Image 1 (cartoon, rainbow, N blue to C red):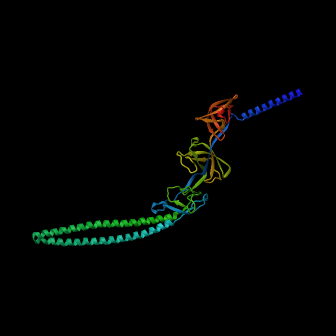
Image 2 (tube, one colour; image 1 turned 180 degrees about the horizontal axis):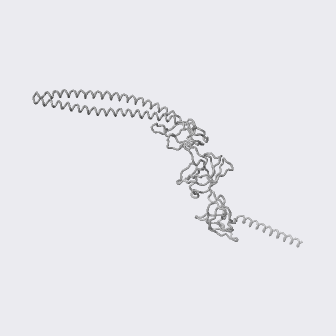
Image 3 (spheres, rainbow, N blue to C red; image 1 turned 60 degrees about the vertical axis):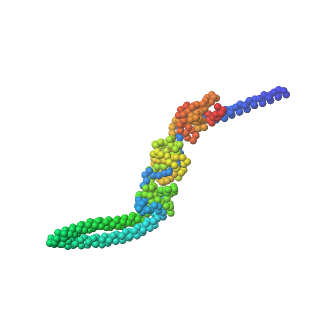
Length: 411
């Protein structure tokens, strides 16, 4: 009986030892899952940003210059009708019809002004003719008086010296009167000429303004200058031009619409200021499209804005980036959205570790190596990173074992 009990105790002890060994093995296995062995392999880091597709070259459709003429005072017009956005149009096809009621009203008012100006011109010419005719008659009469005084002067030789002196003075006065009347005539003639010229100028300006209104009437219907897909511009509040909306007549403003040439395509995107230092002109880009499943087009950064700007879709300043696609696709349409993966780093053989192995502290990056059961803090130099891994520039070698999610309190 005692031997049997002793056998049971020994068996139980053996079972406990086996259980403890298994538990210890499970701990070792659990710890081994927290170790990452550094190996060389392909590494890629990208910066993803949304963009908008457009043609590299596009023909703008500006507001007709005549509609922005300040003399017409057409500051804003209503859009009565417009072509469908994204529609293919040919040269001369309808693009937009603007409300011409302001133009018609302005032209009627100017026609009334022209009638008044023409009446004033006619009156000015009549007044000039009457006034100058009267002055010429005065000069003619003054010359007759001079002749009479000349005869009197010639006959005064038979009179006394005093009478001769008086005749001479009368003759001289008559000469002075004629000279003054001639000067007055010249001054009045110039004055009346200027008045007629001003009236003629008012008539001319009014006629020219009416001609501008007539031209504005014609150009209120806007047509396509070239073949292409029409893409309408945006109003001051960022909304697309639409029927019954208003549009500014400022001719130097943004174009009413554009006709992009989709044989060469760009993607216009914006990069946050915290990321702009990561990219440069010439960086390669992978472009995909939500509307075209499976279409991937390679591209490169063509230009980067030098100055940041505020944008309604971002909470910080952004920089405009233009990405030039290597090729086009029949399915690409203007204003189509694109997904741009800017390739920051792409190496066939590189050292990298999981992000959860790296600790950043006081501006330095370091990892903890597992060296024969000991934890060794090691400074590293990191490069670009993707969603899971970070590139190692210096500090680690292939085969090193780094601890994942190290707990600093336990180290």
